[in-house]
Image: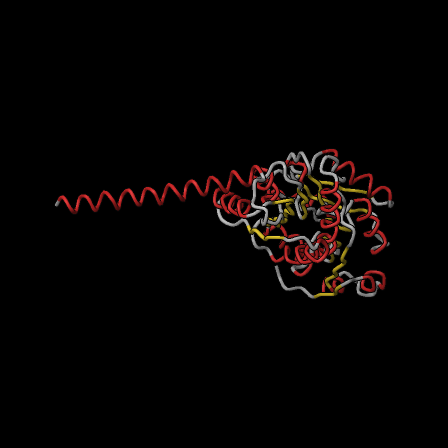
Length: 326
């Protein structure tokens, strides 16, 4: 019995030493990450951090890596916030991090939490203003400037005179006024209807449908749900109204067309911004609008609206597709 107890005590001490060593090692890695006290052989790299594993991230990442040529490590933030944070902390502890390329709002938020002073370039983030970003940060807007967007709408649809928009609380008065000015600049009247809940969308559309030639879909989680999109794509087609989306996925599901940034160009822009940011972290370059655009047109919807004979619209499309259903 005494020998067994002695062996058990030795095993327990060994177990504690092993756990203690592991804990000390983990803490040491985090300290190294925070102080930059890495071995001379450790090479600095860029962390490419994504908000999950969305297919849309692949093109900008590939373009970014081709353009920057810097060593990079991909970190996909999946799971709960705590799990995602630990994944990012482990990646940051493996080697020095000279910069972060973050895609999606979750990636940006956690990157600033874990690496608050590391230069960061973001892309594909809706409403980045709400993240309250400070320090060495810049990025590429996910949305095109509304002024250039409305100019394209008018060029592609010359008979456009009144455009409707359904929006929720995320769009404030200043944003609506900017949209109104952009529409007026190309002789188009804006007919805006505010909704507070997804259930109000159908009624809001019915109130404005006789006053508009087109309905512009803004990326608003209140106004655009799966059910509301299905309703609007069906009703606008029957009412002879052009449904203008912000993503080609919605065009495949039944909208007339989308004018959206090209993901490859966004990745290239991010790489250029990264180099400028690393040259002068104290003076980050301004956030840029996306440069490249891609026009996708649904030929079935165009035919239903009598727009298939409009050479300007179909001839300008980067891709012509048919509906796949909502």
